[in-house]
Image (tube, rainbow, N blue to C red):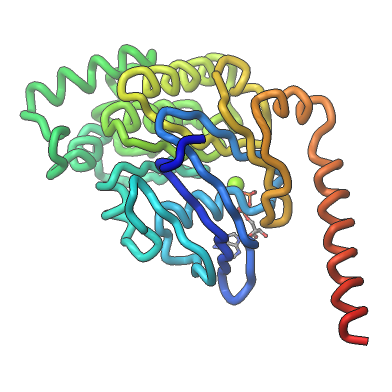
Length: 266
Ligand code: ADP
Ligand code: MG
């Protein structure tokens, strides 16, 4: 790990509706690295992604988030996006009336180095669609409306390759995909990494998508705590053993902490 990580989450405790969801989370991603955040359903993985992106639904109670040398804890989502952060949603949006191509065009508008003339934009988008094995007819269709799960994910990959963010947080990009869409997403991730030395934080609870990726670091989250961090060797281990061990360990640690607290009270 380099001294100055691209993304640095330090002691992050955060809540929604007064309920604390993340507890003292530490997580660093260096430039060009691929990290994976794993954990059972409801662990807080998506919450962490939304907090990094600045979703106002969540409240930071403690800690800080720094990106590319800047404290972004208080920044709006738009500013974080312009700083080079990208989050793909677990459930992508549908915007009736807005064609996909207009949406893509708007997403690069006003961005230094990304803005293009109409002709160049159309050429670039077509090129990327071909790379992602995507029918260009989609470009004229309303964003997300009637798209299958796999098609929505392809759109996200297209947006990723167009925007070339410094860090892409991909939330369950692999869930519910058939083999064909899965391979497109893998290919998109690979292309993103190669084309702009992109860094990734891949959120997932299944290991299939990771088979073809060089993963630098794996973080395991259980009940809002990071309970383990290791290299890629942890992936086949989780594949075989699931998250039960971590859940049990976390429960034991909680029981111990509660016992200590009770003793101190007595
Ligand atoms: P994961 O992505 O690991 O499955 P989530 O981050 O979606 O987990 O959820 C973690 C916990 O936080 C869950 O108990 C969930 O119900 C709760 N939570 C997340 N977002 C919200 C929200 N906007 N409002 C209420 N509860 C939420
Ligand atoms: Mg989630």
